[in-house]
Length: 184
Image (cartoon, rainbow, N blue to C red; front, side, top):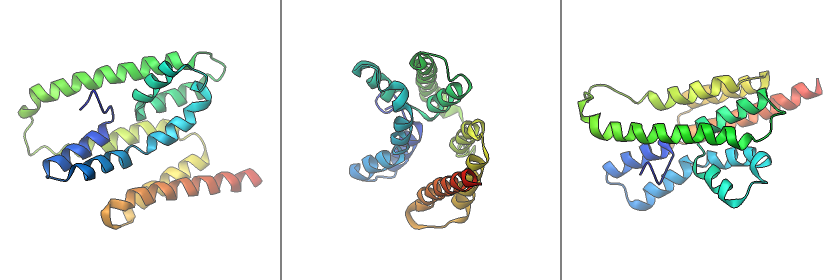
């Protein structure tokens, strides 16, 4: 699964649903919904990678992860004049892919040594926090992150829709703040 679907959160969700006996359609739909954020990432990277040939675009799409996106966006913000952003992206994304594959193999071989009492549920949110913090460059972004984070904790909606609602609230708050401060 790690070679075909290079998306950790979708893999975790699909594995949990599979272990729980969920129907295949539910597993596939969940994976697709969890990965919808990659549409936003792709749209954001399109101005930089849109002129690349189809082989490059296919590689960019396959290797797109939260980490590769975040590091590429930060790198471009720090070095806007540099050419060949796709080579930077490829280095980050290929390194991430290789690390993920090695970690998957390590998990297969050594996973049974981890005591079941150790809860590792915090790893996914911790990874997202570590990626988001360097991207919080201005007031609007910090306000959007705070609003989305608070909403994700405070909202209680069925079917875990609080996460989707929190993301939308964060985006709307960020856009409103950006427009408000632009007028001031």
